Image (cartoon, rainbow, N blue to C red; front, top):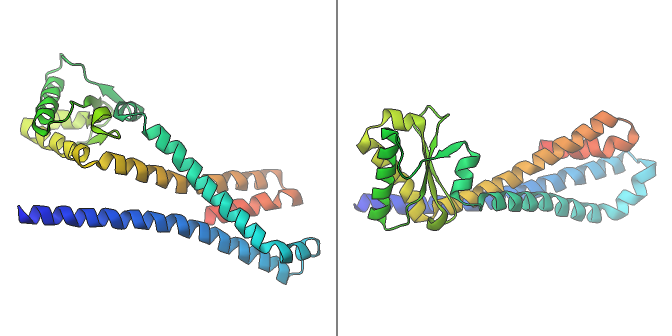
Length: 234
């Protein structure tokens, strides 16, 4: 029992470390873009590009500030939009991932066994019974819990788990998912997923700008091409 609680504390420390690393990733992304933009501006100065040389010299700080604001805006807006999607509740997430909700009185014996196990675990853990889903297209043994709280949670189990696990094994899997519900892991995972999506949105924005610059060609599209290349590189 002592080893269990020590392991639990270790996992909490790792979670804190992971959150810090995500924050560092956001900061590092912004600083990396700023650094590449600064290098590009000074490269243009070194080459004495006449049309923009004087302007670059006097507006470097402003360009860096604008770059920082744009990159942060992309990350924060994309993260907020994804967090909004993930806050629709566990059932919405399960449906979005291809889940099919199990009826209260299913005719399929395997689904009835799953519902019985979920209801037993809910009673044992004194939380509301989550909505139950089956991932019909998932042949492997898998499961997940979703939702921002115990009141809107859902548990999804793969078709492979229903076919290959006996009752005790299925109960172990469901109990594991209930531990995520009770410890608030679903809410934390949702926030991390949203932040990761915000970081990925920087790449998406880079691809869009890169394609605009490449497809149109010409001198006017060069800034789009370079900006897209910088974001994709970061």
